[in-house]
Amino acid sequence: MKFGKWYVPMIIGIIVGMVTGNIFIPGISNQGSQSTMTSTQISAAQNKAFVPPGEHDEYYMFSSGGHSGQVFVIGVPSLRRIRTIPVFSPDSATGYGYDERTKELMGGFTWGDVHHPSLSETNGEYDGRFLFVNDNANNRAAMVNLKTFHTEQILGPIPNIMGPHSAVFVTPNTEYFMMGTRFSAPMDGSYQTLDKYSEAYDGALQAISVDQETGHMTPAWQLKLPPWNYDLSDAGKGPSDGWAFLTTYNSEEATHLLEVNASKNETDYITAINWKAAEKAIEEGKFEELNGQKVIDPAKVPGIVYLVAAAKSPHGVDVSPDGKYFIGNGKLSPNITAYDFEKFIQAIEAEDFTEEVRGIPVVNYDSVVAAEVEVGLGPLHTQFGPDGDAYTTLFVESAVAKWKLGEWTVLDKETVHYSPGHGTAAEGDTVSPDGKYFVALNKLAKDRHLPVGPSHPENMQLIDISGEQMELINEAPIDPEPHYAQIVKADKLSPVKIYEKDESNPLAVWSEEDVRVERDGNNVTVYGVALRSRFYPDEIQVNEGDNVTIHLTNIDLDQDITHGFGINLYDINFEVQPGQTNTIKFTADKPGVFPYYCTNFCSALHQEMQGYLLVKPKQ
Image (tube, rainbow, N blue to C red; front, side):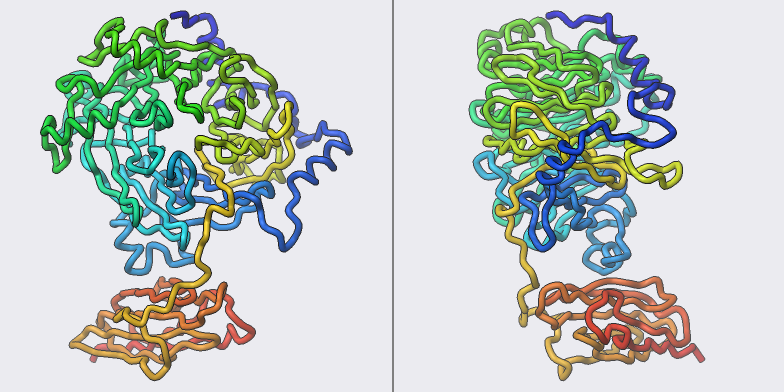
């Protein structure tokens, strides 16, 4: 095992310099960005990325919205942002977080930190049914139904875990996704001072099981792990199906000044989890109950968790399409490390371990490593194309490296602008990647777009990877902060255009004749309809202090005819899509006259679509 140390001070200095803005990056000047492409190259790139008006993109890209709490839907190759899906944060444009269904979903939280979207899979292929995302801030996960592009479930906060950053990456048939913790904490939720960190704090992994028909999520079991930081994960496939892999850092168990104290050891680890063995342990009752969760301690139940050394502070771990290799991205090393899964299993069977750390066997690195490939400075994350091609983002170098599985040689590099974190390739997490496009999710935009003050967008750049050499062909700004994305063929999705008319829904009315207002004491319930271009009823009379519920059904069964419902001065707006019934509740605590109106432009008579809420003052 050879992990050199000579480059660490240099790379740490470069990273710190970039973060503080005191490092010179070629191509940046106060005069703005200057293209170095020839007119012929520009024309060729435009032709490859251009999607004519009225035509659709070949792919959807689902990108995390980071601390916006949302998911961005982007077309590839155009990089046009098509939609924002509200998930963990309110969205006044759609009323998400205001209507009763989504208010309950959000559970009282007003923001989340979306990091890693993962599409549902069947036999290792994206199947276009569901999208799962994690909330690094509040220990939650969410499911988006890709029939409607609406968030259908939010699970959590999940007990015993803290900051599930290394999520969500689904298993090949969406049996599970794993949520490993970025932060270690006392699993029982107790107060413990940091001087007791190594004794009283734990890392954790939550396995979430997924209903194959509905996509709904259920906490299945947890693993108690050493008190380290767990960064990213991936699920095995093919021969490695049944395993999951996580990168770890801070095996030093530092609690202060981590940029120094969490990089003292020469190596950290990749944590390998045999989730089928964990299932068996649950069946055999080899777990403890903690806050209602089934928790397995792998130090007490051997055969579930193993460690293998990795270059210090690794970021991504990525399983090759054939499942034969898992790739550790060194971050502070110029190398990626490819581990041979077959040799890994052979080493376990031969008990070829170098030591135990906190009761967990450490597999002999030299017995399982296939290759170390020097790809460049700051490798963070690897994606795959067909024929063994691999693509690794280089944060420090501001580049993407193309290299070959099995040959272990770098074939090409493409400069990007600037400092890519993750990258995503077309169908790049599946067993059969397409290999047409790669999107670099660059953390810094600097001079690439018109200036908008001190706060910059981030920068997505589209690279054509269909030939021997990579070619940058498109870029677009994006709101902070996409951490990861997945690209799926558009024809795998079949979203509905309207909601089906559901006459069994007791809250819906489908004609003006059925509209009614009911009073029960100081509770007023309105069963109304919206259609081009009026509301029924267009007058609602209540008394000050009444509790008001409005069930509104959009009976315009025509695609793209969405109606909004906003009430002046009551801080209320929500939308109803074609065929949908939605509900809002509020207390009429302000007396007076308050217009309500359609907030989504729906017809030539949109301005006329209004009504009045009359709140009679208390006597």
